[in-house]
Amino acid sequence: MTMPASAQGLGGRLPSDLERETANQLRRLLALQASGEANLRVSDDEGKVADITLTPAISKLLIEVLRPISRGDAVTLVPVTQMLTTQQAADILNVSRPFLVGLLEKGAIPFEPVGRHRRIKAEDLFAYKAARDKRRSEALADLSELDGELL
Image (cartoon, rainbow, N blue to C red; front, top):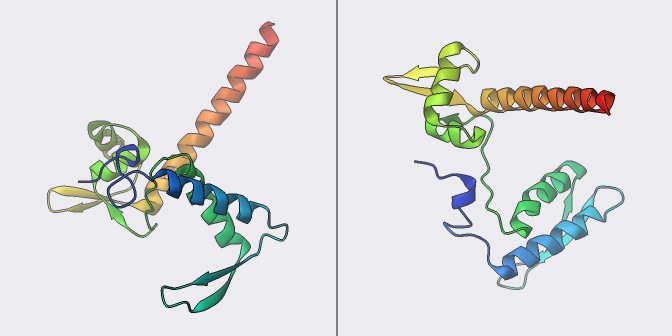
């Protein structure tokens, strides 16, 4: 069973103060790169040094991953090709499993039956989540506009 991100940390624990500060420091350094390309120099336990150039896309992704860690939150990465259980999908959407099953039965999110179980492709789940978030943002903008007209 998957635990919600708020309950699951680095190796089963939340980041330590040192890990939070390190994540925050690295996030700030990556954000300062004007070109979006970052050059890192790292050394292994034997003292061997390697230079690594991060592309703008990887730098941006790392910044997004480091942001919650620097706040002390946990992060879970899900490959888009991964098949999720209904509980995992419900945790990602922050809804109950029965509510998610209702969405699946209504056809709001595609799924594949596996025996008696349902599996949801992470890519489909994230597409649903993006569309849901867009609808919510548009509805909020409409409400704000209506509120402005009343004032």
